[in-house]
Image (cartoon, rainbow, N blue to C red; front, side, top):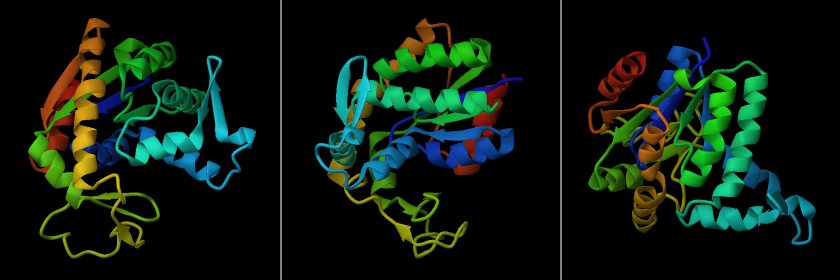
Length: 236
């Protein structure tokens, strides 16, 4: 049976950690919008200003990829039509390959939602789309993000605990642990929280009006407990 699981939640809610656990458990392709963007930004690094490859055209409007990268590193959300275009192209490719999906933190805005959800419904069927909102307080969001590290190679998120605090390499692939410079600074995190409230959270109402149920999970529990609750919610 075809399946799509969508995880929503503020920065630091554990979407990345839960995404990896669930995708492995349910044999889903782990789709991260942030990685789609990062890959596009890396492909465009160093391009001259007059290079046509620096731009993506959507509905007659051109978006400068390097300008979108600047927006992203400041903690703001990239232009929704630009993001929606990249996301839809990737989803079409994965669907053609017969892959079921787990989307962590995508879609991020109403514009993206209105673009991406009809495509997901067409390719997978609305009855096969499960949406989970991982709830987390702003205080926990700031604490988790300001202490968060990822690995250099595979971008695994490393949960910040007393046991992992002194780790210098990723226990999964052995690469160096690093902080996302700029993106996880406290002031940038505050901007990201406001962006989430204003631009992402309204998706919940949109989904529900569109006939899609949104299941809520307490993200302040221990990781295994959040994982178990999500599994329970998506099987209901």
